[in-house]
Image (tube, rainbow, N blue to C red; front, side, top):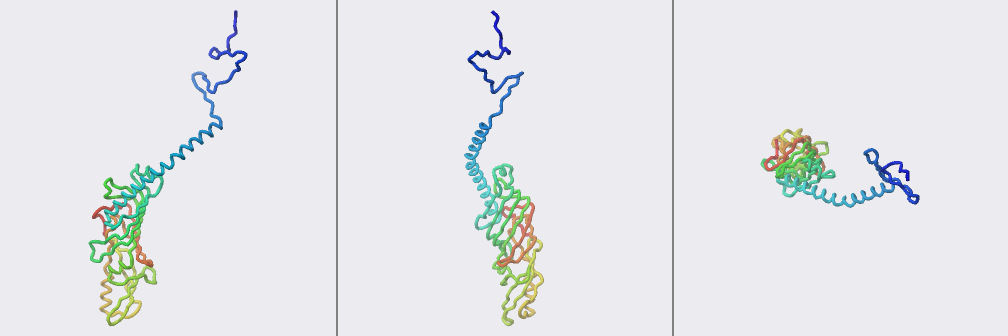
Amino acid sequence: MYQSQPAYADEPAHGPHEPYEPYDSQYDGGSVCVSAPSPERRRKLVAALAGVLAALLPAVLVVDRVAAGRAESRTAEAFQGGMDTPTRPEVDVRGFPVLPQLVSGSLRHVDITAHDIPADGSARPLPVTRLTVGLDDLKISGDAEEAHARAVDATAFLSYEDVSNALGLEISRDTEPDRVRAVVALPLAGEVTVSTAVSAAAGNSVRFTDFRVTRGELPAPGRTLLDKIFAEPIPLRNIPEGLRLRSVTPTAGGLDAHFTGRTVTWRPDASSAA
């Protein structure tokens, strides 16, 4: 007896009590067509992914912070070893995340603050009270004995107490810009106030020029002595190699010496005063 066949040989026949339901995926000429997930399913997938990321984020932050801490410690070790500071400097690695920066071998920006950098090897030592350094693209060697930066901006603060000790005169800020003054007590002439301009000189030195008396009478021998004291610039020793002194500005508490550099290195006995 003849029986009718389904329209397609690979499509199953359905009885009168078996309604036809379409497939989510269909096979057509060797390709598989999958229908897009419903909006509700998409929302669930996004929510699940957000939950996973939220769970992983604290761990990622902790790992990145540990990596940053190690980089800061190595940088502080290198700086302290090169500058011979009594205490380890403060180091702050900027930018997040830090791990990709470490993998690339270069930290985008690092801030360093060091205190009491000594001034060895000078007849008139002038220590650096505080040195603040901002470094771009910092690279540190594997043994942590030296570091290089593409660009550096630094300020050395020189207290008036240290400047006074170096010159042998009591130095303070003058009322005129870019000048300092000194009060000299002479046996016969009494107190005499003198003023001198301060600026940057070659060899990372602080220069004193335009010396003049602003109060009192200065005998000729005293003028000769002060001329000699102010004539010789004071070199700033133990400054990271590659930094160049650009300006010196008197402030209320001391002198701000501004430095810039491109390739800067610090390591034992590598500091520069030239």
